[in-house]
Length: 198
Ligand SMILES: [Zn+2]
Image 1 (spheres, rainbow, N blue to C red):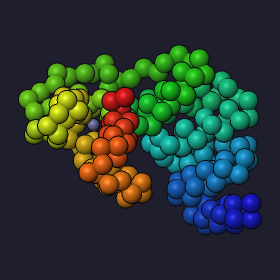
Image 2: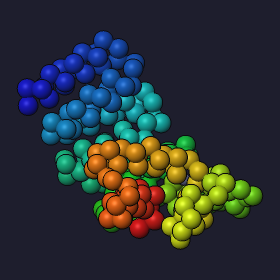
Image 3: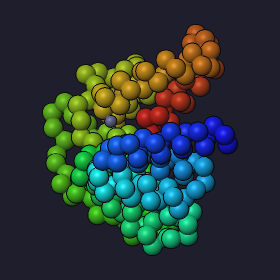
Image 4: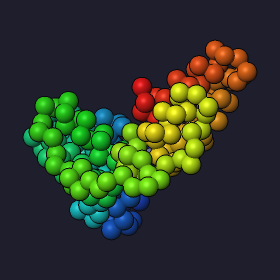
Protein backbone atom coordinates (compact mmCIF):
# COMPACT_ATOMS: atom_id res chain seq x y z
CA UNK A 1 0.00 0.00 0.00
CA UNK A 2 2.91 2.33 0.83
CA UNK A 3 4.25 1.63 -2.65
CA UNK A 4 0.91 2.43 -4.21
CA UNK A 5 0.67 5.71 -2.31
CA UNK A 6 4.18 6.67 -3.40
CA UNK A 7 3.21 6.07 -7.00
CA UNK A 8 0.05 8.11 -6.60
CA UNK A 9 2.01 10.98 -5.06
CA UNK A 10 4.52 10.88 -7.92
CA UNK A 11 1.83 10.96 -10.58
CA UNK A 12 0.00 13.69 -8.70
CA UNK A 13 3.14 15.83 -8.82
CA UNK A 14 3.53 15.02 -12.51
CA UNK A 15 -0.05 16.04 -13.26
CA UNK A 16 0.23 19.22 -11.22
CA UNK A 17 3.62 20.22 -12.64
CA UNK A 18 2.45 19.77 -16.22
CA UNK A 19 -1.35 19.98 -16.20
CA UNK A 20 -1.57 20.04 -19.99
CA UNK A 21 0.13 16.66 -20.27
CA UNK A 22 -2.61 14.05 -20.57
CA UNK A 23 -0.30 11.19 -19.65
CA UNK A 24 0.19 12.52 -16.12
CA UNK A 25 -3.57 12.50 -15.57
CA UNK A 26 -3.86 9.10 -17.21
CA UNK A 27 -1.19 7.50 -15.02
CA UNK A 28 -2.64 9.13 -11.92
CA UNK A 29 -6.13 7.92 -12.81
CA UNK A 30 -4.91 4.39 -13.40
CA UNK A 31 -2.97 4.33 -10.11
CA UNK A 32 -5.99 5.66 -8.21
CA UNK A 33 -8.21 3.01 -9.75
CA UNK A 34 -5.66 0.32 -8.82
CA UNK A 35 -5.74 1.69 -5.26
CA UNK A 36 -9.54 1.37 -5.24
CA UNK A 37 -10.14 5.14 -5.23
CA UNK A 38 -12.60 5.27 -8.17
CA UNK A 39 -14.04 8.69 -7.41
CA UNK A 40 -10.68 10.45 -7.74
CA UNK A 41 -9.69 8.12 -10.58
CA UNK A 42 -12.72 9.23 -12.59
CA UNK A 43 -11.76 12.90 -12.15
CA UNK A 44 -8.21 12.31 -13.41
CA UNK A 45 -9.31 10.15 -16.33
CA UNK A 46 -11.85 12.77 -17.41
CA UNK A 47 -9.08 15.38 -17.30
CA UNK A 48 -6.96 13.12 -19.47
CA UNK A 49 -9.77 12.73 -22.01
CA UNK A 50 -10.48 16.47 -22.03
CA UNK A 51 -6.88 17.00 -23.11
CA UNK A 52 -6.77 14.10 -25.55
CA UNK A 53 -9.98 12.30 -26.48
CA UNK A 54 -8.08 9.64 -28.45
CA UNK A 55 -6.72 7.58 -25.56
CA UNK A 56 -8.93 4.49 -25.81
CA UNK A 57 -7.60 2.95 -22.62
CA UNK A 58 -8.69 6.02 -20.63
CA UNK A 59 -12.34 5.44 -21.59
CA UNK A 60 -12.01 1.83 -20.56
CA UNK A 61 -10.58 2.73 -17.14
CA UNK A 62 -13.13 5.52 -16.70
CA UNK A 63 -15.88 3.00 -17.42
CA UNK A 64 -14.41 0.64 -14.81
CA UNK A 65 -14.17 3.47 -12.24
CA UNK A 66 -17.78 4.54 -12.84
CA UNK A 67 -18.97 0.95 -12.46
CA UNK A 68 -17.25 0.80 -9.08
CA UNK A 69 -19.18 3.96 -8.18
CA UNK A 70 -22.45 2.32 -9.27
CA UNK A 71 -22.85 4.91 -12.03
CA UNK A 72 -23.84 2.40 -14.65
CA UNK A 73 -25.43 4.84 -17.11
CA UNK A 74 -22.33 7.04 -17.16
CA UNK A 75 -20.10 3.97 -17.45
CA UNK A 76 -22.05 2.84 -20.51
CA UNK A 77 -21.71 6.31 -22.02
CA UNK A 78 -17.94 6.33 -21.46
CA UNK A 79 -17.45 2.82 -22.83
CA UNK A 80 -19.63 3.46 -25.87
CA UNK A 81 -17.75 6.68 -26.68
CA UNK A 82 -14.44 4.88 -26.14
CA UNK A 83 -15.32 1.90 -28.29
CA UNK A 84 -16.42 4.19 -31.13
CA UNK A 85 -13.30 6.33 -30.88
CA UNK A 86 -11.08 3.23 -30.86
CA UNK A 87 -13.01 1.91 -33.86
CA UNK A 88 -12.42 5.11 -35.83
CA UNK A 89 -8.73 4.90 -35.06
CA UNK A 90 -8.50 1.21 -35.98
CA UNK A 91 -7.50 0.17 -32.46
CA UNK A 92 -9.24 -3.17 -32.42
CA UNK A 93 -8.04 -4.54 -29.10
CA UNK A 94 -9.47 -1.77 -26.85
CA UNK A 95 -12.49 -1.49 -29.15
CA UNK A 96 -13.35 -5.15 -28.72
CA UNK A 97 -12.58 -5.08 -25.01
CA UNK A 98 -14.99 -2.19 -24.42
CA UNK A 99 -17.61 -3.81 -26.66
CA UNK A 100 -17.33 -6.90 -24.50
CA UNK A 101 -17.76 -4.84 -21.29
CA UNK A 102 -20.86 -3.22 -22.79
CA UNK A 103 -22.28 -6.59 -23.70
CA UNK A 104 -21.69 -7.84 -20.15
CA UNK A 105 -23.59 -4.78 -18.90
CA UNK A 106 -26.50 -5.57 -21.19
CA UNK A 107 -25.98 -2.27 -23.03
CA UNK A 108 -26.75 -1.84 -26.73
CA UNK A 109 -23.81 -2.66 -29.00
CA UNK A 110 -21.97 0.46 -30.24
CA UNK A 111 -22.13 1.37 -33.92
CA UNK A 112 -18.84 0.65 -35.66
CA UNK A 113 -17.70 2.28 -38.88
CA UNK A 114 -14.99 -0.28 -39.55
CA UNK A 115 -17.51 -3.06 -39.96
CA UNK A 116 -19.84 -0.93 -42.10
CA UNK A 117 -17.04 0.22 -44.37
CA UNK A 118 -15.92 -3.32 -45.02
CA UNK A 119 -14.00 -3.69 -48.23
CA UNK A 120 -13.40 -6.88 -50.14
CA UNK A 121 -10.38 -8.97 -49.20
CA UNK A 122 -7.75 -8.30 -51.86
CA UNK A 123 -4.99 -10.33 -53.44
CA UNK A 124 -2.45 -11.46 -50.82
CA UNK A 125 -4.72 -10.36 -47.98
CA UNK A 126 -6.76 -12.06 -45.28
CA UNK A 127 -9.59 -11.03 -42.96
CA UNK A 128 -7.66 -11.73 -39.79
CA UNK A 129 -9.48 -13.59 -37.07
CA UNK A 130 -7.23 -12.15 -34.36
CA UNK A 131 -7.05 -8.41 -35.12
CA UNK A 132 -10.18 -8.19 -37.25
CA UNK A 133 -8.40 -6.23 -39.96
CA UNK A 134 -8.08 -7.00 -43.63
CA UNK A 135 -4.32 -7.25 -43.78
CA UNK A 136 -1.39 -8.83 -45.59
CA UNK A 137 -1.37 -12.58 -45.28
CA UNK A 138 1.62 -14.91 -44.85
CA UNK A 139 3.32 -15.87 -48.09
CA UNK A 140 2.88 -19.57 -47.24
CA UNK A 141 1.48 -21.75 -44.43
CA UNK A 142 3.92 -21.57 -41.49
CA UNK A 143 3.69 -25.33 -40.79
CA UNK A 144 3.13 -28.29 -43.05
CA UNK A 145 0.00 -29.52 -41.33
CA UNK A 146 -3.66 -28.60 -40.82
CA UNK A 147 -2.76 -26.00 -38.16
CA UNK A 148 -0.37 -24.31 -40.56
CA UNK A 149 -3.06 -24.21 -43.20
CA UNK A 150 -5.61 -22.79 -40.76
CA UNK A 151 -3.21 -20.02 -39.72
CA UNK A 152 -2.47 -19.25 -43.34
CA UNK A 153 -6.16 -18.91 -44.13
CA UNK A 154 -7.28 -16.97 -41.05
CA UNK A 155 -4.38 -14.96 -39.59
CA UNK A 156 -2.53 -11.93 -40.95
CA UNK A 157 1.25 -11.78 -41.24
CA UNK A 158 1.53 -9.08 -38.54
CA UNK A 159 -0.33 -11.14 -35.96
CA UNK A 160 1.69 -14.24 -36.75
CA UNK A 161 4.90 -12.25 -36.39
CA UNK A 162 3.65 -11.07 -33.01
CA UNK A 163 3.08 -14.68 -32.03
CA UNK A 164 6.66 -15.66 -32.98
CA UNK A 165 7.94 -13.19 -30.38
CA UNK A 166 5.43 -14.40 -27.81
CA UNK A 167 6.08 -18.06 -28.64
CA UNK A 168 9.77 -17.67 -27.87
CA UNK A 169 8.81 -16.36 -24.44
CA UNK A 170 6.44 -19.28 -23.91
CA UNK A 171 9.20 -21.75 -24.77
CA UNK A 172 11.66 -20.05 -22.44
CA UNK A 173 9.31 -19.50 -19.55
CA UNK A 174 7.82 -22.97 -19.61
CA UNK A 175 11.20 -24.54 -20.55
CA UNK A 176 9.58 -26.54 -23.30
CA UNK A 177 11.75 -29.12 -25.05
CA UNK A 178 10.23 -28.92 -28.51
CA UNK A 179 11.25 -32.43 -29.60
CA UNK A 180 8.82 -33.70 -26.94
CA UNK A 181 5.34 -34.16 -28.50
CA UNK A 182 3.64 -33.18 -25.23
CA UNK A 183 5.55 -29.89 -25.17
CA UNK A 184 4.67 -29.29 -28.80
CA UNK A 185 1.02 -29.71 -27.85
CA UNK A 186 1.30 -27.11 -25.08
CA UNK A 187 3.04 -24.73 -27.45
CA UNK A 188 0.28 -25.20 -30.03
CA UNK A 189 -2.39 -24.55 -27.42
CA UNK A 190 -0.79 -21.24 -26.45
CA UNK A 191 -0.42 -20.34 -30.10
CA UNK A 192 -4.03 -21.09 -31.02
CA UNK A 193 -5.28 -19.15 -28.02
CA UNK A 194 -3.06 -16.20 -28.85
CA UNK A 195 -4.24 -16.23 -32.46
CA UNK A 196 -7.89 -16.47 -31.40
CA UNK A 197 -8.36 -19.76 -33.27
CA UNK A 198 -9.73 -21.75 -30.30
ZN1 LIG B 1 -4.09 -9.88 -37.62
